[in-house]
Length: 172
Image (cartoon, rainbow, N blue to C red):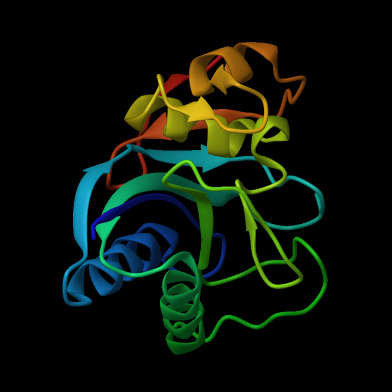
């Protein structure tokens, strides 16, 4: 069975764009995984812990034979290969890979929460997610990503860039 997952990708240490691209390539190398779509890259203001460098973020839409838990394990293994250190909440990281949605499933366990519980509070997730899947319906709120983006109170900067890090325009 093929599952559809939306994965948030982010980095704010080292060569951030390279980290994101290489992590996406790692995800796609797993047998049976297929990247269906990928958003643009965005330079984003830190959220939650502001005394750190800005992030590069994007979202990928993935078709995968893996269950949500196996996909989580794969993403965590990739984070380990990128030497991600888990420390303070929302701290700097070489790579961050989060399952945002998995089909239309709702999972709420100690180890995995789907949909990601902070999606609607984060423009740095909502804007690239809206680029990839604006009509995707959030199964808990019964609203589209576009609707949730329009309703978010987050005012942090999210700037669309090209692959070399040049600004395209400000997203409002």
